[in-house]
Length: 599
Image (cartoon, rainbow, N blue to C red; front, top):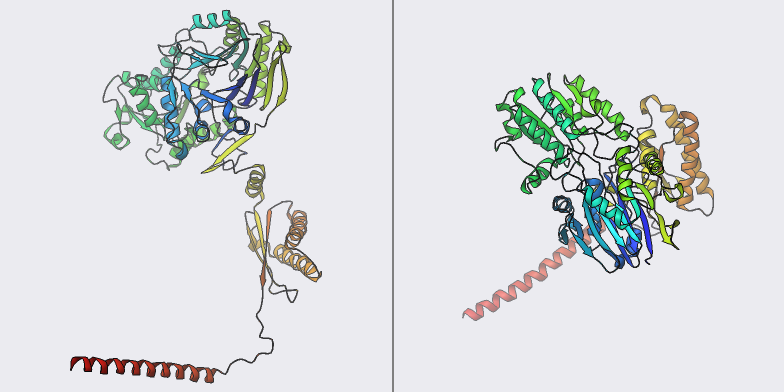
């Protein structure tokens, strides 16, 4: 019997940021290492990754990282992980190549080279478990599910998956292998929940291709396609449709060229013609009806780039009358407002919008029927819905109940929950620290809730700065307070408010100076409290208040007479003269000595 724990370090009750730790006796196996892109309330944050604190505390027990596929939600946090942990990383050939690209962008991860390519036939024997893999269908080739084989049964992590009977080679699910894993006995299933709420069946990919091909055929102007760079399946469909309709393809986007070239090098992406791809500089040589611009955006999100195109601010392509913007990615519910705003901007620029999601239920994730089929094939004893917000995990749990799994054997984990298999029963026994680590520029984890709160207040109510100069020895204010505001009020129309604020500041500071003992922190806090109360009464706003207290110390001579300036000048002149005489005598002696030497 093995001691088994399943810990959700990310990817539960949230979109993306998938990271799960499976402990078998003394070994820790990491399943995926993903990131998520921030939602609107995380002002200024670039990306969010899991908190590695628990793994830091158990660094010597981590035996490896096992990746399911090459999307950011599975590999995005890997550069930050391998900067701290020197453990091997396993994944399919395509996944490993994309992971290397991600690591090359992070300074501390550039030198990491402990990557290992695996496939569905690979088995890796460790002291306490055996790791194996199975093929799944997703929007990127060589996606894999992971099996952790223990003495108590298999622990299966599906990764992102769906079932598509018409999937192309490289994307097909191995149903026979799934049945074999189920026959061996599955203790726990960690199941993708990202599309569990959708009642409609996911459309087959050949239907999607026909729709793309038809769109290219009947639109006579230029087509700008918005697509996630790592969605290799969709990129291949766009390339094939462009070729069939006599159009050239130009790539634009931070990640597009690297990922497309990598996929072509690995023979996962095929060009029907060698001259199909053209550079952005050559676009002017072609008519609009001969061009497809593939926009992938930065960090896999093309919507911001489309907005720049609509506003005429894009570095290479700007929208004009007759353009069709074809959105082939399925945006998450969290950015529906951004999508609506982007559509409006495109129409104002003279273009039109078409989206696959408007016509079909297109997703790279399992529908309800897919989830139920996966459970029937594997027959798990326990089910852990993962990869989705709570409502999606709950919908996945309902699927588990419909196929006959007891409700007490279904766990909707919170981030940091530890499910432990003990005495032949799975229970949530404890929890570990598993917050968010926010990346802002080059800063990793140095932005916390307090900083985010201040950013939110600054964005909503602005800042109020009060500068006061005091003479501490005389216990008085030297000059009237200087006040500056940004994003709070329009100063020219609020002179009375500024004058009253100045009076309050003077009164508070003087009251503190009149006390025999006071400290700077108390003085500043007193100014903040009094000003905050007054400004809210007047404006119903809470700006960030920054009091700046400056102190001067006037030097005194304490009865000493100042030296007479005239006398000082004479003395200085005498010193210079004497110095000159000494130098002259010394020089003359040297000349005399030289003359004697010559004789």
